[in-house]
Length: 332
Image 1: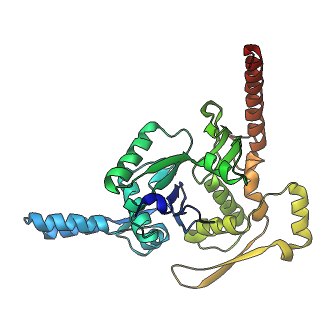
Image 2: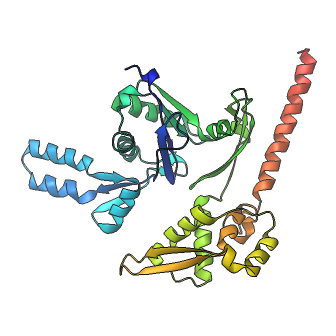
Image 3: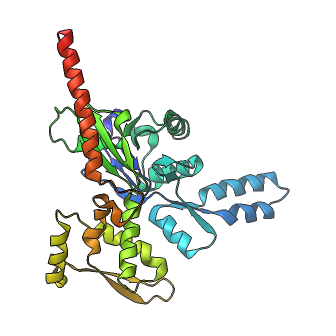
């Protein structure tokens, strides 16, 4: 069947999570951590047992390459078994290990989406300011390994801006705040193109929000197993956090009616199997507050997010005026 008659495969690879599905769907089919667990001892043990037999060694290498897991299954496997090592192929928005990335894509296509890559066009995403070599490596893997008929690589903020428009006719112009697990960038977009010289990065990310919530819960004396504290903070961030317009009013609301605004998380201690509970209170609004009052978390960076955006807009405003005056001068 012609690939154009089938929906395109969309894979959005991020530092922390990967979203994948098919074009036309309202939401992704799968959202999974961008993690890979590989059995390190499998290859060495099997090849040692097959010493002297080249065919057995080759088979051992093939089986070792197939013995890996991705996503939540990889995280669970690395916790339950010491033979599996967990790695993250993307770091700070950039691919850090191409072999692991290829394994990850393989599982995404064949195990999760269960499709034949030769029958679908592919849409992949990349972060702003990605070097051209990364696109070359991505295209090489997609065309030579998976034999995809067509590939388009789009910048994540541009797609986010496109998703915000409800009409087909749009100028695709705006400023996108792209907060990821490993990188946060403020990206101006004009007519669908990223203005690379005006992109700004700030040293606060989604992982910092999680670590700040983890710190607040520890200082408040919540009884959480140390090995579970980061995961609990991440769950609290994803399920209950929100931004507020006035932090003082928010504190007063929580103090007046703590039972109304306090949420509770439950879990199982991995070592003993006993259940535990913890309350999520001020952390619900204090976590995202580090973007607007960064001094409460990082003394080295104290510029609020809104100030960074204002500076970008002021610079773009000057460029826009220059463009208008130049066009008027040319008589257009």
